[in-house]
Length: 392
Ligand SMILES: Nc1ncnc2c1ncn2[C@@H]1O[C@H](COP(=O)(O)OP(=O)(O)OP(=O)(O)O)[C@@H](O)[C@H]1O
Ligand SMILES: [Mg+2]
Image 1 (cartoon, rainbow, N blue to C red):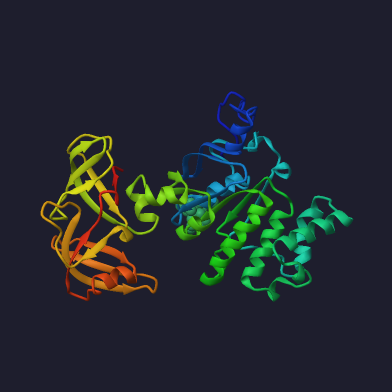
Image 2: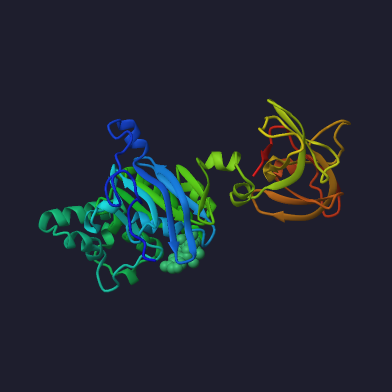
């Protein structure tokens, strides 16, 4: 069934503009510069995007993060107008995307592979889109060179793409997108062609350039470190749905689900049931530890509810001595594996229950407990503020 673009039966009709709730309020308009409302995308039987709602602020760098096939590129392609929307609405700066003809869409997309024209110089690659829009002469030259300066590629203007490094090609592709001064810049896996070292440097460069231009940007990545380094806010996506939206700090420290906790960084998960729930603390009974779990925040849910407690490896301390009688949040085990990572060391401790707990220890912390080795008996412990209770 061919899917028509635009909202389905909204007040403005299939292709009409739904009145924006607060367009006259500059604050509201800035917070909702891009609005994605109940957007669904079906490819025959496959539902690639299942009713996504989110807003991107003006000037923000927003990342869509999720594993392969979860629908990130599809959502981005709908924003670019390259893919029709099965149902729902996309509004950019107060204008419904569906009612804009393609040449008027204020959006530019940089693709997973940059697709520079191999036979053209850097300068011609950047000028190409502007020329198509009829920009000529001094204005053309001025805009191309200002943009090449911005990405620090002016001195390579006469080179061809094959004479450039991967990172340099990436900056030319960015210049080609920025030179058209889009209201919304879309980046699909912008670092995928770069190796790890140059990737990290380029991430910071790219953020600095985007800050300078002040363009609103939505990027797609499956690399959580990249999203955390670059984005102001992250939407975590799974199977066509948004699972959580927040700053890098929020999604890491306060994951709202098992999925986010495991997807963003690594974590230790303990399954149990709630046996005491007060506004300022929760006790959870688990078969995985000799003690109860104690978390210093309350939850909403009945006693006896199954929950999962997430404790990040860097929140876990290792000791040689058992904790005092009556302590919570501890376990006893033996060192099953040690992974030296340079700046830190990962200890895998196999508890008496069979559960393996991973602790991330600095060399200072290790010095204090005389660096345990394989098969040593150790205790793992954490504080009441280290755990996050997950109910989904
Ligand atoms: N043109 C198409 N026809 C049919 N199915 C498609 C089409 N494009 C995408 N899909 C399906 O939609 C789902 C989402 O694809 P999408 O490309 O959005 O994933 P992604 O999150 O970008 O993944 P990756 O990280 O691998 O790029 C996948 O199951 C994919 O097979
Ligand atoms: Mg993709």
